[in-house]
Length: 73
Image (cartoon, rainbow, N blue to C red; front, side, top):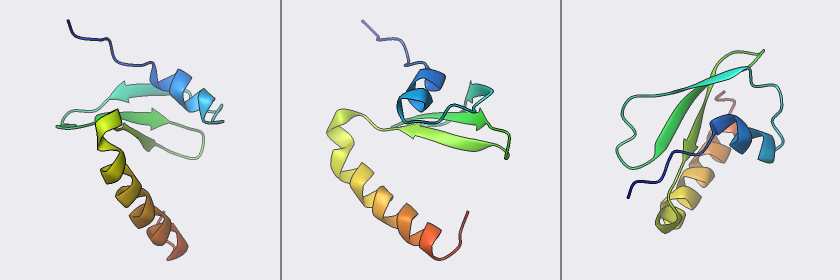
């Protein structure tokens, strides 16, 4: 049986992000769940990995932090 997708706004609130005004499931997401999230400062994305993808998620986190440090929004 297929489990329902988590509520993206609840996930964001659990992460301490309380200003999201809406979220729409994005197409694609072959191996992860992806939403376009509306926030006052502009849209962003929420991407959720499955538990067995922990290694991949950690690698992506390193890349995202490096990008942020280099000024990439």
